[in-house]
Image: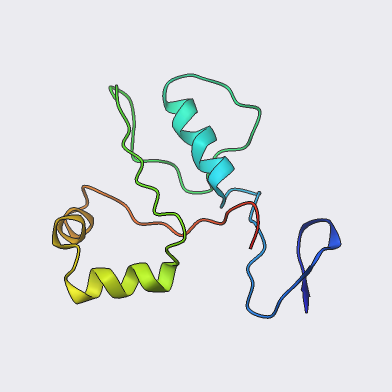
Length: 101
């Protein structure tokens, strides 16, 4: 077993939350920062593409859809509009961790 935050044992293959810039809490902090709203949490390691002049952000959350499942759906053609936006650089696909594996 591997060890997660605060020394909690994780099941084999589980991914510990990446609170150092790779989790959902960091995503919300980054989105809030675009609008000048402090959250007290660190931003994402990789900055959002919003560089000013943004008045809206669309966040698509697919709860309980794992990264590998998502990749299979994109590759199979079941999400052509989203795949096109990602390929065109109009959307970004990132893997983030949640609060619990």
